[in-house]
Each structure stands twice: as structure tokens, then as C-alpha cells.
Image (cartoon, rainbow, N blue to C red; front, top):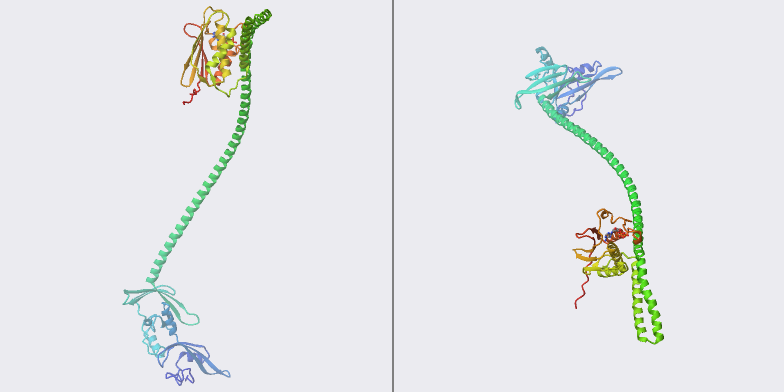
Length: 506
Ligand code: ADP
């Protein structure tokens, strides 16, 4: 058991020559068992962990080799890590402790015998090996205990720790970890709060996500509904468009048809007007023939007489006869010219007529129908420009005058009164006669086509008033009939006025 050699042989605390026979690790190793031992060095009182093994020569144990491990560095490391812990050995003595106050104290109270025995072993040098100073100890279960340590500084009631202990493998020692309850509680509170916050946050996220999901679902549903409605609308629009297109095409076809019909109607109307004129001329044919026959007969007589007067040398009488012949030929030419102009097709685009000219021309044309007997002609109208074709106005007047003359035929006293009345935009021309008048039953039918009361001899066609009324309406005017007080008939022709051209002033 005497130290032969040591790593600190040249230090002042060298182990060389020291007798270590009493050390338990030597006693174990010398008999061949591995020696493990914690102890405090007898020389300088430094604690260490000793690992001893026997040294053999030819199978015989001749000595022991020992390695001492200093454990203070472990304590330092615990302190650095802020860890509170201790290690107790097989005698329940704390050999390593983060808190120096716990070091070399008995974890469980020692019996006086045991304490003495340990003191004698010098394992713990000269340490008193007092009990661990605690205020209260509450065992919780195997390896778990609540220990309250006194603490002057921090709390008068002491500091409570949760002590968790566990045997250390390969050693008879136990490791005890001390966890301050306050800190644990604080941690638990803060962790709890953190967990609550996290939970609240996660819940909020979940709720938000759920709400968003709902919103998205609603939005999707709304979008789908909108899409459906849109599709339906587009379908309906397409149907309507097709319908509209079809009815448009129909309308166009109808318009074409109408235009065509209108054109045909207009042509027919023109033809009818023309036919009406020719009818008037036809009606007048007898009187015209008579009108032309008279000067013709006079011409024959006059020319025969003139030849005889020339033979006799009576030149002055012959010359006077030739003058009369000239006049007669002129009159005949006038008659045929006015007939030709009346028969001419009218030009509706040239809407300007002089009332006086038209009245004169019409009176000249109806002259042959005037018949025998006196006729009083009253002219009470001003000359004015009317918005109607000249020939058309003449045609209307010829019709009205012819009818008036026909109505007064055979009467002793015949009065044809022509009266004018200027309005704002229209001129009213009244043609009144004192003939047989208009009986109430004929009044509503006057303007019907082919309505006539005239005997076949007078050649009535029943078109005169129809055509006249339509010509007046075409020019933007009207033709009406009335039964005036005092008998006879009165026809009122209203036609739009044209502004009279005033001659420029010098
Ligand atoms: P028409 O002269 O060929 O008979 P009209 O249309 O000119 O055709 O006249 C229709 C009818 O109106 C005449 O047959 C006649 O009975 C009646 N009528 C027209 N003007 C007069 C008038 N001034 N006085 C009496 N009856 C008239």
C-alpha cells in the first residue's frame, strides 16, 4: 500500500511514499477486484474519484495502479449551465454539488455509529458530514421528492425544489436534479400563456380559414349562379336576336312589298288621273266638235264668198273676209292648244300654280259646255301662287265648273260664283252654283269612285270628284262639299299657299 511512483512525484504534495493501505480502492484492487472510490485526499484534502486496478507479474498481484479523476470541473459546468444538482455516494453523502453549501452533507440523516465509522475511514478527510439542511421534505414517489431549502436572501419561507433522483449507471451513486418549483410554475404559467396565445392564434386561424372557406364557397356559388344566369341571358339574347333578325327580314320584305305596291298605286293613280282627264275631254268631245264645226262652217262660207269677191274685184270686202278668217283660225288653234295642254301628263315635282291662270284656262275649256242662256259669272278672288301643279289645278277646276254647269243645265237664271279666302297657310277657293243642289242621300257618296247621277247622255263616269279630291290631298290640301243656304251646291278647295315673289326694289 505504499506509493512507489506517482504523476506528481516532484510536487510538494507528492503521493510518493504515502501509505494508502487503508483506502478501500486499494483493498479491493489488491485482491483482484476493480477498485472504485470517491474520497478526499489525505494530503491536501482535495476530493477525487479513484479508479484502481491490480498490477500482476506472472499471475501474481504485485501491486495496484490508481488513477485519480478530479470532479470539480463537473460542478463548475453545472453552475455555468445554471443547473442545480448533486451526486450522492453509497453512504448518502453528497460528493458533488452545484451549490457548495450542499457538499459533503448526508442526504438522509446518519446514525451516530455510521457517522463515527465514516469519520474513522477518513474517506471524507476531516469533514463533519452533517445532515443536508432542509426546512421540509415531502416524498412524492420513488426518486421524486419536494424539498424546501432555507434561503435568507430570496424568501423567508425557503425555496421549494422538485428533486428528481436516479442511480448513475456503473456506480453506487445517485444523481439528483433540483428544479425550483417557482421557476417551473413561472415557466408553466408562461408556457400556459404562450400555449393559450398559440391556441387562440391557431383557433383564430382556423376560424378565419373556415370563414374564408365559407366566403370562397359563397363566392364560388355566387359566381356559378352568375355564370348560369349569364348563360341563360345569352341564350335568350341569341333567341331574341334570331327572332328580331327574322322579323327584321320579314319587315324588310314587307317594306319592299309596300314600296312596290305604293309605286304601282302611284302609277295607277297617275293613270287614273289621266283617264279622268281623257274622260272629261270625252265628255266635252261633242261640244268641242260643235265649237269647231261652227267656225269651220263659217270658214267654208267666208272662203267661198272671198273667192267670188276677188273675181268681182271687190278687194276691200275680200280683205275684210280674210281678216275674219284669220280670227276664226286663231280661235280654233287656241281651242286645240288648250285641249292638248290639258291632256298632257302632269308633273307633280313642279308644284306651283297661278290661280287666275288656272281659272281662266278651265273656263276656256268648259266654254263649249256653257250652253245656251245667260250665265252670271262672279269672280271674287285674288291671284295667288298655290303649291300644286298647274295642270292638276286646272283639272280640278274643270271638274268643278263642269259639274256646276251640268247642275244648272236648263235653268233660266244661272249663277256661278267663284270666291277666294286667304288663310294663314292655305287658300280656300269656293265654287258655288245655284243648280239643283246636293240632296242629303248623295252627300256622303259624292267622293266615292263611279258615283254619278248623270244620265248616260252626259257621259258621267263618277270619277271627277274622286280624282279632284285625291289631287287636292296629294298637294297637302282638301276638297269638301256643302249645301249652302239659299240652294245650289258649294265646293271648297283648300290648297297650301306659296309665298308670293315680291319684285326687287331699285
Ligand atoms: P260625274 O260628273 O262623272 O258624275 P263627279 O264625281 O264629278 O262625276 O260627280 C259625281 C256626282 O256628284 C254627280 O253625278 C252629281 O250627282 C253630283 N254633283 C257634283 N257636282 C254637283 C253640283 N255642283 N251640283 C249638284 N250635284 C253635283
